[in-house]
Image 1 (tube, protein in one colour):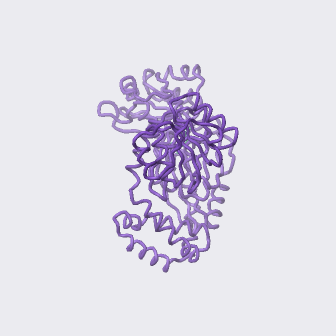
Image 2: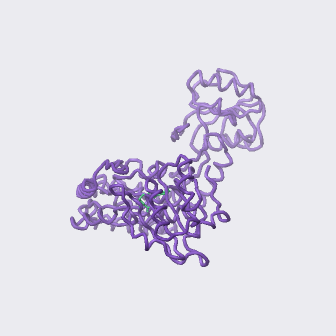
Image 3: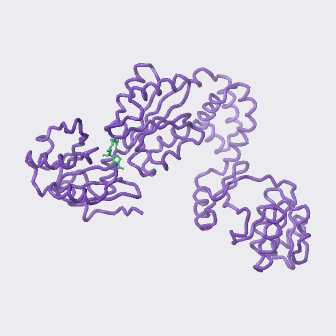
Length: 462
Ligand code: SAH
């Protein structure tokens, strides 16, 4: 983070704006909205500021800036078109430890103004750290469209009910759950449509009937995090991640996805490496049960889809046996993600009417697969965990009847900025891979459909 976003209370504080033009007027407007007492120093004022001065909404000092103008000032903005004056204001303010903003000169600023969505008391501030104010404004426009204008009323309603809710549900975690449930229910919509009284009534009723015991019950959400690109998460995955108390995650879950989990949630790494189990499966199952029993909302985050080579079934079986409430959120499995991002359709009317997902995991240096069934005409074969056994896989497929010129691809770190697609045939792919310094995870696709990659490739990793 280049800047720490904070919200400053400026009510009745003396703030100084140096400059009397339209940019200065915009900053004055913001400061006034935050309740600051504003003095403007400028030889002349633009019409907007002149109106404010006349209405005694601001104080105008008709002069050029001098150091003693900073007297009891809490915050300064310099918005003149004179670079020397701007630099002087910045230097003097910084020396005195007064927060200062110089418009369009981030290197002179001790704070910058974000783009603001104002639904007071709800305020959303967006910043690009000065990289692109336009980008910040575009994002703000999207948020404006997304956040109903009555959002502030919703916050007011919750504020007025806050004490009553605290009394009724003293436990913090249970209270958070209650509020989340209220916000998922009809109350916000009532407020947005102007039926605030009905909303208050409803909240009161819910509060009367609340049962702190059921609110305190833990649960486990087994969530598929997809193949890597955070954009491929489902809405439900995101919603549940943002209300987790604790998250158990795998090696395959990238940091950008983990960042989307509720900030306060505890994070537990239970990843496995091939042949090396950081935390044994039985132990993971045990931790899930214990945490849920302790009333936690547990998110078990897995790469891809939990039910495809993800041992999701085993974890859930334990939960079911122990009577723990759980739910399962599907994810985009590596085969789907890699196929889409590599431009290799898994089925195609001309080339493949079926598709088979298998694991190429080695067990004691052998791969136990029903080879003869894997190579069928018009069938695409997707092999997970096949990198170490790649040579064996290609050899065995050919030994059981696949043509030497059968197209095959290896997709490395599919859907991520580091994606690479290596394309060859069953004969050439092992050599190509050996020369390419490949890093896990990788997925292998075998079949005529691989030929389509040439024309359908679209994703350009950074
Ligand atoms: N449940 C996961 C699979 C777990 S097994 C899913 O549904 O995708 C782990 C294997 O998945 C890896 O060895 C690799 O073969 C494959 N895999 C997962 N993510 C991948 C990615 N981003 N690119 C390529 N292969 C991936």
